[in-house]
Amino acid sequence: MRLDKVTALVTGANSGIGREVSSHFRREGARLLLTGRKEQFDGAQPDDLYVPGDLNDEAFVESLARQAAESFGTVDVVVLNHGLQVSGPLTEMAYEDAKNVIHSNLLSAFLVMKHFAPLMPAAGGSFVLVSSRLGMVGKPDEVLYSAAKGGLIMLAKGAAIEWAERNIRVNVVAPGLTATPIIEASFQRREDPEAYRRQREGQIPLQRLATPKEVADAILFMASSESSYITGAVLPVDGGYTAF
Ligand SMILES: NC(=O)c1ccc[n+]([C@@H]2O[C@H](COP(=O)([O-])OP(=O)(O)OC[C@H]3O[C@@H](n4cnc5c(N)ncnc54)[C@H](OP(=O)(O)O)[C@@H]3O)[C@@H](O)[C@H]2O)c1
Image (cartoon, rainbow, N blue to C red; front, side, top):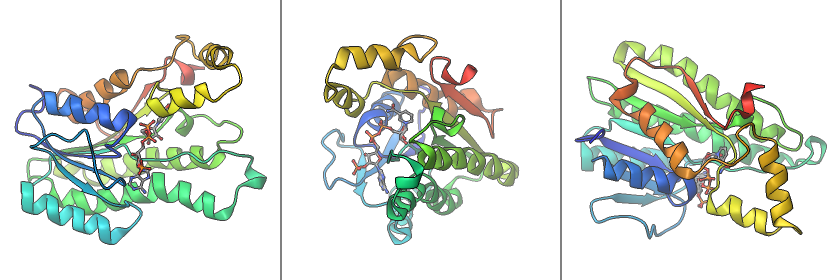
C-alpha cells in the first residue's frame, strides 16, 4: 500500500474529485482527516475524521489543525482539492464574486498551508494543490478563476523552495475537464446535452473528459513517496489541452 501509516488531510472531500481521492487514499492505507462545508459526509468510513467548515475562515483552519494535532499528532500529506468556479465576463463580475473566487481557491489554500506545514513530521511531508488547466491558459468568462488557479501554481512553487530544507514537497495537479457528477449535471442542463458534450470533448486532444479516478491517480502519485524527488512541479491531467 502506497500510503501505509500515512496521515492525510483531504479538502473538498464531499464531492467529485475529492471524494475519489478520499477512497483512493483509504484503499492505499492512509488515515484520513476530511473536510468540506456540508455538515455531514455520507461517504466517510468509521476510521475517518470528518470536520465540516469554511476554509476561508482562518479560525476554522486553526481549529482543524488543532484537531489534526490532537487526533493524529502529525500530518504527512495535505491535498488542497477544494475550490469553486464563478464564470462570466470580466466587466460584469461583481467584486464580491471575484473575492469569493480568489478566497475559495487561493487564499484558503494559503491558510491551510500556513497552519498545516507546522504539523508535518521532522522527516518531511507533501502538499498537493489541485489547480486547473485554466491555471495555465486563459479562457473568456473564466478570468478570475484562472487568476486564482494560476496563483495556486506560484503559491506551490514558492513554498516548495521555502520548505525544501524541511523536505516538505509542494506540487500541483492541474486537471482538465473532469466527469464529476456536477460537470455531468451541467451538461444535462444544456438544450442538447450530447451535442454540447461532443463540442467540449472536441476541444481536448484526447477527445474525452478525464475520469475522477485519472485525476486521483495523479494526486496519489504526487502525495506518495513515488514522487520523492519532485517538488515545485505542475502535472497537467488534461488530455493534452495545455500542450498547444
Ligand atoms: N471537475 C472539473 O472539471 C475540474 C477541472 C479542473 C479543476 N478542477 C478543480 O478540482 C477541484 C475539485 O473539483 P470538483 O469538480 O470535484 O469540485 P466540486 O465537486 O465542486 O467540489 C469542490 C469542493 O470544494 C468545497 N469548497 C469550496 N469552497 C470551499 C471553502 N471555502 N471551504 C471549504 N470547502 C470548500 C466544496 O464544498 P461545498 O460542497 O460545501 O460547496 C466542494 O465540496 C476544484 O478545486 C476544482 O476547481 C475541477
